[in-house]
Image (cartoon, rainbow, N blue to C red; front, top):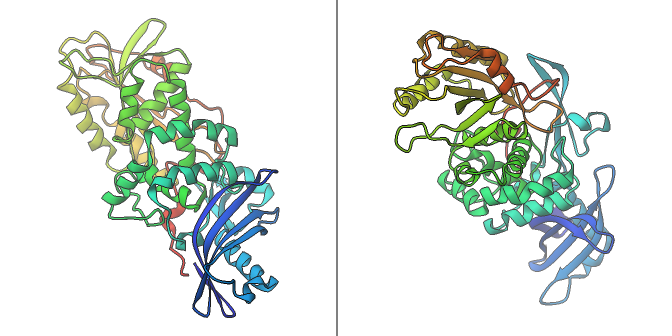
Length: 435
């Protein structure tokens, strides 16, 4: 980032966040160069936020081989440097205004989230910081931890900072910096500030972690999903088989729903096993579940609303060849709709209609399909899950009751505030600002 102030050129080369001084103040730390008539002087600028979204000077240190140009000592020059850095730290914030099941209009502002909408602003980011050079990838988690600890603008809506800090090591273990870097390299990108197409492998959470480390993402639904993964890992920490599930998390996005559903069932005393054998060689299903002594196996799938029926039919066909002719327990598919971004009501309805149409074509070896949504509502916090459709197979070898399934997979919330979000990010609409 270069700013022209009279005869001085300021260039911000890096930004990080943390705590400073005896009073442990939250600060942003910018390093860069000031160029005066060709002479380069390095600086470290420490700023702290004030209530109106502005930033005030805490400390300014200079590093130069010769004497510091006199103009850099002037108050006006120091003020220009502070303003240069502060502009980079401005946020754009978005929140829903008129809420309805079919959608909502969005409001936005710059710098400070209004107090009356602070509890439903899910999207906040710093666009101008993207012009600052990226840090080295091996510092990714250092920068994320610094943001959680010291950037007052970074927040996961519905969670306190202590909870986020508690689960960070669990998230870091699954998605280390080398994993994030590899996802970017596979997408032909080299820096944390580079664009990353949401349709590419590993977009979630590689994009969210990189942009958080870079200082851009301040609030995003993706972080609620990340905290949910951390809390699920915490719940299942000592459950037999969880280590295998953890290894799959970074390889298969669908495992995220698998993990979180397992955690929810475990808390309710219904999870009896992870990856139970089907009875054909080493083939497994995802979960072994039981209520009141009645056990059944679950295959967990997560789809978007694009071609759900064809995808589910393909998954069922693949599973059938891995099941024994004589079942000891019913086999149930649990399918959730999880969009990227804001849910679309029309496509959502088509998704569940397509699931219903499968009822007459289920093979006898599949007992039922349970379908619902997995989403975040406008209040933030934990990820919500519901049941929209239960399709039982009247010709199943091992039949299972619909009401029993509804009791096992009961909705995990009492009310919803619209709009609702999948693993979303409004960064898909982002245009990298000019210098």
